[in-house]
Length: 413
Image (cartoon, rainbow, N blue to C red; front, side, top):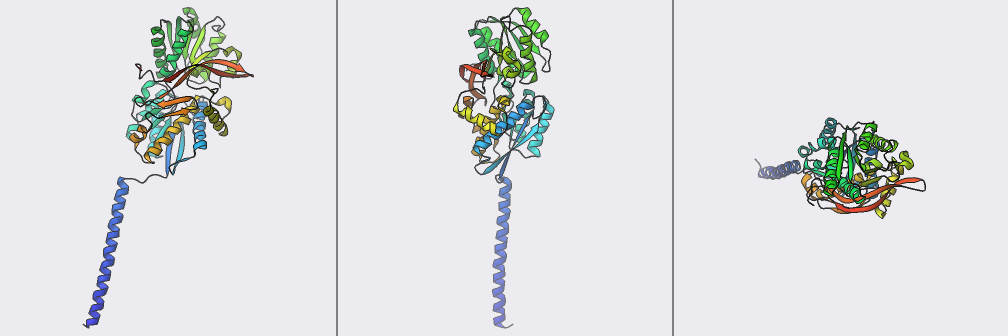
């Protein structure tokens, strides 16, 4: 063959060999990149948060406040964190239904690919949700359910609401300070009610008081007349009561008034669940003077609360429908944003929770922090008395009990 032709063929072969080598290297590089992405998934552009709560039915007001509190937070702070959009997905759970609560949580994790769960109005529902968060590697921010043991169900559970121990220990102290010697305890017969009973009894008896009777009422009780008769029969100075916020609480307080206990001088001391601002107009002047201990009142006088209420108003939530679940949701959204920031949007549940342990800020309710041991919110509990000004009923804050822990988990603190 002609030497020139041989040289041309050799040159072409060398060029094609170099091209094939580059293509092989490119293919190998793409394979390595895909492998790396499978091991270290790319950060999602949208972080999804599943919120489970009562958005309809008799307790719908409290779910409505969950949503309004979250929307108020996003209105003030934006809908993204470090370039990651944050989307809240809402699922309705009308009442106590642990099986449905668990199913909703699983669907949110598996189908909707949420990285965080939040909400939970009732304790049995929160307990059910907490059973799936470890497997789903999904931090869970409790925005209402108030039994102490919930945060013990998983290291990925954090609470921004309150516990019955936290609110009830100050109630017992106030009863003693007001000279009450003998009290009846009346509580709903489920987890939070049992916590409230234990907290009041332990604190009141330790201070020298005595318990004349302890009444446990089925959660669905609507006729409180027989209970008021039992209170009368004891000759006690008053009654400490807890029921979950909702229609039954108004019925209980009205029964206390209508059966003559208030008029006869008996004292009613409650957690704030029984004297929510939304219910005060229905009680009218008969409700004046009722004492409660709670972590939040719409009337709390601070710049932070004024700004919070203004943001809530922009969501369309009427002021007379604003209740405590709104502030728990507002602060819960704050924690979720902090967890997203700490993990840069990656699914690293333990790092996310660790980022909020010990975290302190000024909430619309006052100074708060997340206890690094219990992952429960520490906060000021206020003595409140139902009052009236310019025709408007409200809870007037009085004595403050600062930096209260969850006494149910930390009784020695």
